[in-house]
Image 1 (spheres, chains in turn yellow, purple):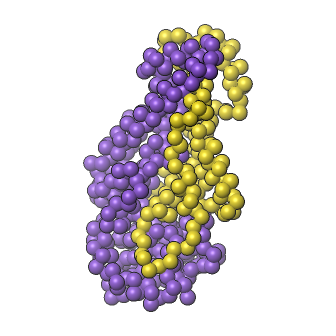
Image 2 (cartoon, chains in turn yellow, blue; image 1 turned 90 degrees about the vertical axis):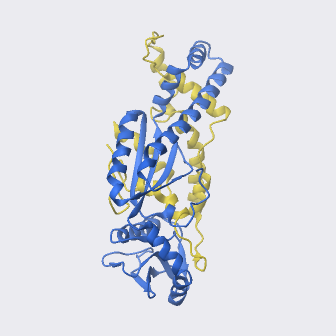
Image 3 (cartoon, chains in turn red, purple; image 1 turned 180 degrees about the vertical axis):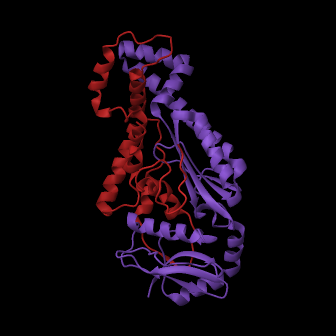
Length: 143
Length: 246
């Protein structure tokens, strides 16, 4: 399943557009690498993106509720307490349709932050280097 | 004329630049600035350069191309010199350091590992292994009580963090034996792990095999993404960058 891109920096590890690899390695390109003091570094709005898009702290009321709801929706196949009220499941899913199948609590938690980033980058840079959404669309490719 | 600087290499590096272009729109032509022993790969610095996707990609592609022919010291994106003499002066000023780094990184490339859990799988795992979580989940389903939901959510959030932390450590330790140096990066977005590995060329097969084994062990619950071989961005400075967690 894992393909290691051999060159070009354009082939992502899991297929798809080159945005995937660039999104993953952009922090190295912008934040690592050799710095030569006498050279000027151009002002880079993109750098800010890295700082904002830090790992989301999951300790918030909103996150707790999302996690709880995601657990409530889970169909635990473990023998103990198999779901008997089958009719409940579709109802719950459609009721919460905005979340969709691929957008549960973890995604939801970062969503708010990435929306902020998108706002931020759209305001200031019409073509940001880092596109948080791009990497997040990977799940559907597995199906 | 202001110059954009991509990389420093040894003067023995062939620096084949034909067919390659640099940052800017239209892309700037690449050229070299050399001293007795070192070469810098440069282009004209476009006006109004910013971290646009196109330009960051161009920077990366130039480096990726150069590293195929020998060791390079990748510069951080966005470095511009005022003119050729300044580039030459910079190379001469720290010639010993650059030679030392070129030697230290010879025959090595960087691999970047990132990974995220499939959320459902992780939640399922937690519910299966924690009786308390199961009990709260059932109570929450039955009553819809917000307080119960909060307790469930808090417990699950704590478990998620603990499991992701443990998995990140497992991933790093599984690959560490095949790397010369390791740097644990701050995991971003939904990722629970981000780590850079400096890998010797003749061990890269072992390294990628170990990564594949790890991916197979975890199966569908975890999605690992391995990028490389990359220019050794993380290991180019003498000491590891201080913004990571490891």
